[in-house]
Amino acid sequence: MKANEFSLLASELGLTAYGPRLCGVVDGWPLTVYNTRLTHVQFVADRKKDRATMRQIEETLKTWGGRVYSWRGNILTLTSPSQKKARGSRAEYISFCAWVMTRAGLKPLDHCPYCGARYCDVAAMIGRNFQLVHLRCLRDAADKARDKAENNSHNGNYLLGTLGAILGMIVGTIPTLLTVYFMSIESSLLFALIPICIYLGYKFFGGKMNRSALFLSVVLSIAAVFLLDFEIVVLIFMDEYGASFGEAMRALPDVFQDGTFWAEIAMNSLQEYLFTGLGLMIAWRLISTTDAGSADELAAALRMARNYSREESNN
Image (cartoon, rainbow, N blue to C red; front, side):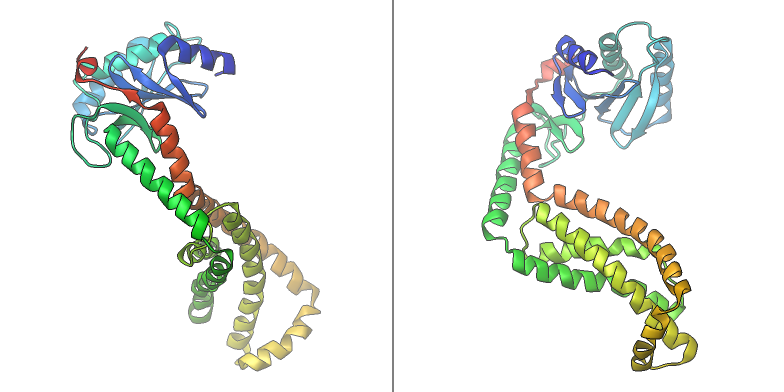
């Protein structure tokens, strides 16, 4: 969907842009619209998937050429047909989807994600879902997240965090070393644990949770993979030749002069760094959703919260 079409759709339905998504309330349904080639409309319903309801929704959507994209838990996503096959505009299709949901006997999930009670009074973006929530609960969550972020900003310590990250790096390499030592197997998948353990160590020791955490995770992960390769060589040398640790270390200079050794290290490192990169992606996701990230997300959710009434859902 082009930018101008995205903006026009938002104005037609009274939706609010939230990054690459639009969210709002249409015909009593809090929903999220994803900016993709085909229009994905996401609802949070009061029931989980059942075959009869699923069949009814699919049959009704077929009249517009749409389909059910997924129904996982209480989250149901409907997909539009291509523009060439569409019977009407995107705005009309989104309204049609809300009508389909109501016709199938579904209602918006009215259980606050924070306290679990009913009779929510606003709809807001909670995580990736625009759903019903109590305004007071959302405010409390935003205040707590802000306080935690401010506390980490004022009291977080880079030195202690770095110490924790180094210890986490050591812990993250242990599973790989153990599998090599006891099973004579090197699993590249275990390298994904290294940046995750680095992040956890940094956080546990009270490091400031900002971009420095990611930078340190990258630097220490690269260093860990480099050092781990040499540790594995030592373990293999000890296993194959029955050498002691000291003898294996003294033999390393001769091993380094062998060109095939460096070629093998380079080939192994490619796969190892691939899985280390996967671990870094997970670590970055954890960093971005900690105190500061949660505070920003909840503050944005609070600003965008829409009033919601029982009468609105019954119309």
